[in-house]
Image (cartoon, rainbow over all chains, first blue to last red; front, side, top):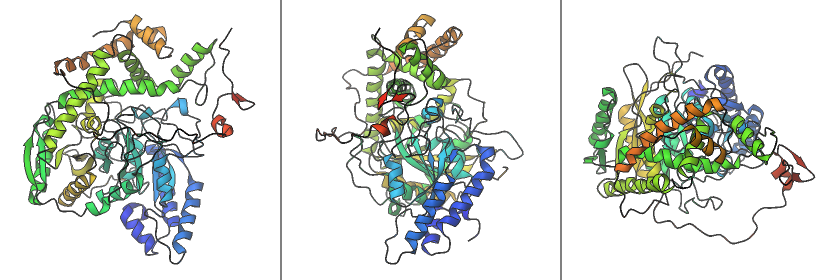
Length: 493
Length: 96
């Protein structure tokens, strides 16, 4: 088989099953690709080459046995976002404060990937504690997107916070990657890099062993090359885990099978509130095109209203920092993580946290501590949770009439590194179309649909009912078929 | 609502974050900008709306058996400690 790294996950699994390629050959091809690309892209913060080869050899041995039932991901080399704790392998969350943290345990999601035979290539760069939309807040430096505007040498953002995951998948440095999404951190980077990203229903994947940012919003999911690949990965990542009290005790459906479902007769909602000021005409046109693609395959289109959409981001920027300030209180320099000695205990706390956390994380901790402080809780946090209830109610009303909702994934294509890092609110607005699904706990997927005039990928988002990822996959696969998006970043590294 | 440097200092202390004096004014400005943007939530009618406390409706928080699930793994727990001795965390003196 030629050009192993360009294979989809489905094709690679098929190739290994038919003995056309071994896991070790695949793994070594990816390790070579990482070695060549990573000095330029900075997608991996840790490469676990030895472990990867050992896992690949074990997989090849399993596949060589007679009468075995193949594991769902046997031998598939994957990248892991550095927010997932991996036993014996440094897990940093993109932060200095966890720069030397080596977990003595494995996250539930990654444990399930290894259970299903996957191979770990290494840990992927990300915005610090997943707080960012451009991968520029990482303590390990920004990730450069494999995409560039034709004729330009300017580095573009791969999006964030799962920028390393998106860049690695787009640049063929792994077959697929884990990611997490608190306000859009799977779907926005997928849209920016021409990859597929799925945030499942809140509670579908266990949060156990994933470094916490905002616990009521955080959800794991895959970034993949195709919708089907995303479905295969989510099938292994999802599932009930008693160690996460918010993990849902629900059976995991056959997501891969759902990709083959017809969209005929499905009612698709188009929310008028997602037509925001200043959105490029190309994105508006692509959205219209997406509607037509679904209609041509038999879906019925309905105009819907989600009236509280504009309040989603401001509500998010109370709820997420509040939960973050509480979650990040654990980094006190005593039990693990960076300690910077001061003259007494309080000063040791203050210095450890000041040196350990970067600027964006500090800003969010302060906002969170402020909105939760005595006298302000009702005005900010409580009100935001009520607004959140109204946003969720909007979706409940809409889903009485429609089966899924189609929107653009992000209000722009990828921007240059440094272009927006000076203005937090401009950066936050990246998540305007994705954050609503986090607040309402709903599944959402981004599918690459076209290139814009500058030659950069654009994505469409499908949002579904809680626990109805199957309809989301069916719609996404229909868009993927119609769009015929095959563009890849041209290697410049 | 705008917040001043004194408030930033108070909140930074609550959050146990040492902020150098020259960061107080810029941080006050940045946070005030974000809080001003958040003010639009005042427009939303939330009368008789219960705050959302569960991301997926219809699932009650489960209870588990009140039993020890893990333990007797002090070595693993201490493995990342900045300072540990004799099976304990070593912390700065707290009581005078």
